Image (cartoon, rainbow, N blue to C red; front, top):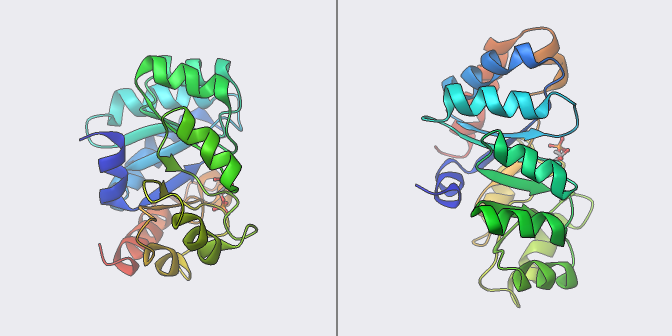
Length: 209
Ligand code: 3PG
């Protein structure tokens, strides 16, 4: 199963920020236990490459591990070297696209305008992170963008939670939603991994998984 198929099947992409690399194991385990075996491990903390390495080595056979908040080619290379199976960035960057295309790794760039989407299409990308989704018009904007870009699928992220996820997933061109609501910083810091499992299970049940 490739990254897109995996994401289409699970329908939720947890956006994970790991402050202490020691939490990686418990957090990945909680996502798997909770039925959302995907992690977009963000380069918002310096331990991201190490966390990606641990996650992909230990959980790579049962979960899809990718990198998020990748903002340059250097981070993209580092993420791929450490086992990331997909790369997400908040915007579109040609230099990241080039690294991913060369490595044969899926790149999910953040785009919110037709021009940005056209730049992504020109580099061969078909999965768009619509970010920050709620600020840029949410469902209505994605529906409008889906008309001219029939081939494109979206992973809206930013402001999505258990209360509104089904509004997004009801749109045909939306294959999954991203978000951090099930992996809140405070829960990770306090070691409340059982709570993370619970919120994940609730999310899975809400989307009818
Ligand atoms: C991201 O980078 O994808 C977002 O910060 C996630 O958005 P959320 O925290 O509103 O879910």
